[in-house]
Image (cartoon, rainbow over all chains, first blue to last red; front, side, top):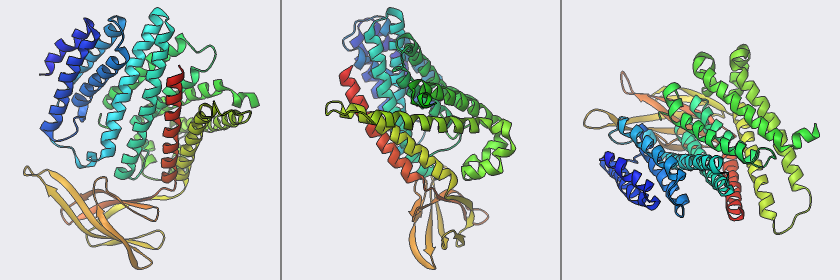
Length: 233
Length: 238
């Protein structure tokens, strides 16, 4: 069923607003998965990659509502398709939530994390657009995405801390995943400060926005694959 | 030196340093698990004293991170004090105060980590059903009962442990521990980490006291308020 998304999302390359159809179908699939397994559909790589792709689609639509097709779509849609492909080939975690994950703090932590990742992704796309055509508006859009993403990511970290305090008796654990999460937070703090320093504005911060998303993706996928941590995804 | 700590560039370079040092730490932690494993099992200052100082090459990243954080704290304080000084107008009050709110929150969260690293305690161990254990502050923890629910396939679906807490010989709190459901009393938290039913029921319990936790929460709330104000103001302005 998810394979239909490989037809629906590319329709946005014809007309951007057609992404609404893909988002509606994709959203229904995500909700359907939640209903089928009786849990929040954000457990494991299959679920989270799919949700990240959908979130990027939503952010892409909101920030591109008045845009015509162009590089914005040519960069974002392949990224969405790549994430869906990753989701499709990943194993599905069937069954209900393990008891330790049955809390609103975990759900809010995960949802906000992936929405902020989506904002960082579209921010990186705007960075690439700025580097391509040098229009100030693209850099402003990148800043808006990354600032909103930073706020949501910070809130997600706080919710994660509350959950950890209730589950493990500490709001902070020294593990590679936590260190990389802090690296992401430090990096976007660095971006927000560097943007105010003369000589860093313009192309350097646009590059930083792109590098930030690569760090986010490593934190999300790479750390889980390469380093053992309390996080399984 | 004064200008060094008042410079925004200092913050940029210190954040860059922290990113590099944390990157190094994320590589060294799994590579030297025997050295870093105890970081989460005891107070951080105890780990520094008992483990980290004996392995300076392996734990050097941690001390570098600590140094960078101290410098960043001074830098944040200096920049915020300078920003707060000077003339204020009604029009730009929120725009000027909100970054200082975020800076203040960041410092409160660091202070919380410091408190949690040096004060309080983390005690853990297996306690058989029907047994009790003495805790700091003339308290006694009694494990009354362990319950586990299994699904039809035999997988454990849920578990809980009923405990009673005594202080100076009289019961002061009782409750049901479970996943994400600790018992808090007088600044102390009791957690059910795991359990076993064979050969006889016993629970692995964790008892913690972290004086920084409340401050971390307060700093986090302040941080969110500050960043949301910045977001609102900047979104309108740009």
